[in-house]
Amino acid sequence: MPRGVPALVKPALLVWARERGGFTVEAAAEKAGIEAELLGQWEQGADRPSIPQLRTLGEVYKRPLAVFFLQEPPEGFDPQSEFRRLSGLAPQRESPELRLALRTALFRREAARDLYDQLGEEVPECRVAVRPREDEEIVEQRIREALGITWDKQLSWPVQPPHYQALNAWRNAVERQGVLVFQTGEVEMSEMRGTSIPHGPLPVILLNNADAPLGRVFTLLHEFVHILLANAGHRTSPMEGRRLPEDQLLERVSNRFAAATLMPRREFLAESANHPAALAGDDEGLRRFSNRIKVSPEAILRRLLSLHRVPASMYRQKRRDWRQRPWFSPPQIAGGPAIEVRRVAEVGRPFAALVLEGYQRNAVSSSDVVDYLGVQLKFLDRIARELVPRPGSTT
Image (cartoon, rainbow, N blue to C red; front, side, top):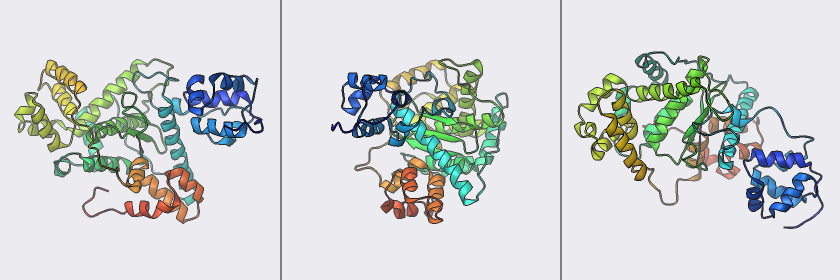
């Protein structure tokens, strides 16, 4: 790596960027292709990096070069504290990949807010609210009415996996409520299936697209409930390294309300009578039931348990079996989907459409569009075509 002229960067900025990126000195040095001792000298002020070396650090930390020339580390908004804390994950222990996903989601939300302002359009607002002690049947009716998805519509979606139509239908319905839904493929499933910024304007849900489509459906509804709870004043605490009883309650409530929304008691039990093999814990029977109602087998079994239709021992055993041999993973498509499909799936249709409108009305620059959507300008026409609803689609 060329040495060049030393960059006049303050050591505190180097430390700040590395720590916010979730890197140890050793891990950052390895990614940057330098010795850990040298990075330590830069952070202590005993030596300085060159501009090329500093640019490499910026690529590792996912920070623009200009941030290293600030007078002091930025204060105030912290992505990690803004997000609902993941169960079992203490602050400051997030992986670099998760931290980057959180920062990117927040960056896009702020971009959307700015675009609405520049275009003179009103920011959509989610007004639905739920409270932890409410009856689940009343809550699920309120949520389904807001989302406009009936039980009959749910059953009408294609029976065969991979159930992307079901995922897209629920996602589009949630997005119409003024929620930005983003996806990331860079975070391990063991660290995150989904999380959210539950407060508005423009609350955010972040999903892990490594999860199966039906797994993402439940996560989407779970996080949406967190937003509705926040609308009623119930928010998860950003406690350092531990969780309050209220936080644990909100997790249980979100699971319960999400399950009730996806599987309303009366309709779900009536349908379960047609699937005796599923009630007996048979994998194939659960698969058929899952394909029929477009809900994951695990969520089905958990709902049956909560309604006292299967024993707890069966649920525990099936959970152990599925962890050893997962059988509802997304199918692998040779070559993967086209870039416009991937980008719209990542940023969501409302955000992509907002950025394109801003670009067409000269509210944002071409470089802004590249930053917001993560594509070169030559792909914008393809993204615009991807946003056009197709006959029979759920958009």
